[in-house]
Length: 591
Image 1 (cartoon, rainbow, N blue to C red):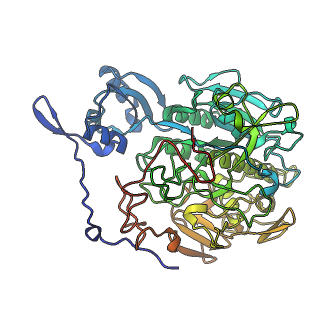
Image 2: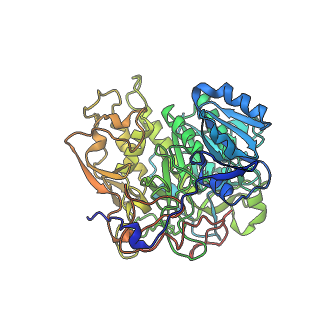
């Protein structure tokens, strides 16, 4: 494998102009510390694109919270909320760039609108999800609780009494409410995670049909919402993790990244949840194809899918069959690396095309797209949708199975739970590689470590003794099989790969209790693996990722207003974050 390097900027004929933030105030020129602004706000300042006060998220130093609050009140900025875990205020500010002058203000980000990561499809052959991924009986997610941060969950016989808590954040307060779903997206995702399929005679059963749900509503009846509402919901789930028994957060939504993951307030909320012991599953985004040119491109991972500690999930098209040989990665599924930071994402891929799940009958989607409805045993109780939203739901169901199975080992013996890092590593290690029409493996920036394999992951998890001392082998039970899984009569070979940061780890990294699997280590950070692990090269390995003569990635990458990948740039002149995604095999509407 060869490492592809970036040619000189001069050779590309590119001139980078840096905006210094100079503005005229009362006849004098003043330069603000605009490096504290994200790219969306810098662009507004540069273009003088002001339409009144801007809704922004301001992160402050920990010792200056009261000082910042006093400043905002004095300047007349309406404080909408304060999030303690991320130390962020949500305010309305007309001259937000002037706030960068205060040393106790660290960053200012736009309170970006975000949307559900779903593509609308005409009815297609239903992928039998539980069979395709190798879901294992008797593990059904019993005793595992999933917080679905989405447009809500509409009560249905498919959920029974398993919606045990519901809170509405669309008004900013997170008030307890009667379960509802005005858009219909959250209900569909929740059904893929753990719907019982009762209304279809079990045909459209979710992956973990006995999980319980906490519904955290952040999207309105159009499928849209604000970043700050999602941050508030994540913080609520994190602070109340023990009280509400939350094991998993599902985030099937996102927005284009406007700054590094290191300062992105939504990413930082995800990282805080992961440190608290919650497995955060996020959709990669549906930005894999340029809506203007039709080209499949890279660097389209949305926020919070760019969070290092999140289990970020891309989509697989299973063709409605159980065997994996005909599986393909749909064009809409976002590829890595992450914008600004250049991290390898997605982590894995899961079925995300033409999936049928419970419909919210009082929702916008149900009313607007009658052709997407699917009959159950009593009527049109289901809908068929596609997207990385659906793939994330499938992955959350597998995580629930894995958690339940791990807890059930050694009845009566208390062991530390598997961490989010360990769960991600197990899912990656046991995943199977997906190949394109020519039989070549998709690159790691397209499929992550591969397609999710519930049977292999659960088998591996149940063999682990998490109480094993660090550095020691922690597989204490025999695996059902090692290196492959039998799924519906097919042999699924494991990829035996963990993608750590921007490198690959081969050998036996998951067979030992390592520092990498602790709560305190951010996925991708530098850790000591020992002599038993062989490190790979950078994650851009072969010609499948080349857009020109060279791929730009790594320490020499030019990140900024344009992602440069050689003598051409991704998707034309810049990365295009369109409002809709089209795909040859799909409908042309993305909500």
